[in-house]
Amino acid sequence: MNTRSILFALGVIILAAAGCNSGSSTKSDTFSDSLVLGTGMNGFNITGETTTFTSGALIYWRLESKDDMGGSTVEIQISKSGSSGFEQINVIPYTNPQNYGHIMLSSFKHTYGPGSFRATGKLVTGGKTVAYKNYTVQ
Image 1 (cartoon, rainbow, N blue to C red):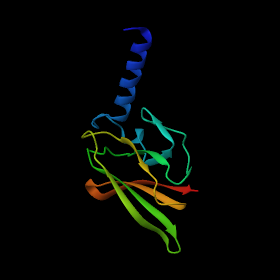
Image 2: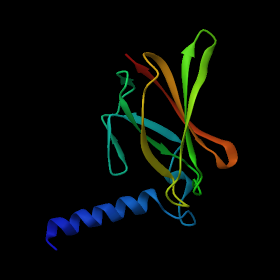
Image 3: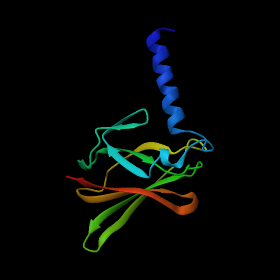
Image 4: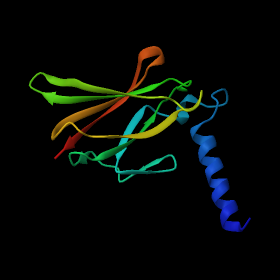
């Protein structure tokens, strides 16, 4: 294995350990409750972080929970802004690929037309709302 491959593998291991610690030795102040949206992903990071998208865009998201997710299914709830505030229009469930960790990444295709929206990340187990992010679609 060449030096470049070794450094890459080491970087992947470090990222995996940072994002997927089993919890007992993880300090709760290491992580925060947040939801990031963007145009792509690279490892445990969202690239092209933004809150403005075009209709039909693939929106990548990164949900980070201060508490260990414990393998819970994650829901991304999509709400659209209307005359009486935000009204839920869809719920997209994501099966967690492991039974521990604080970070989950995936994407969804925005098929709800233009407007002002809110994506809310929830843990199904325990019904915890982790974070939300408002975004605009043109």
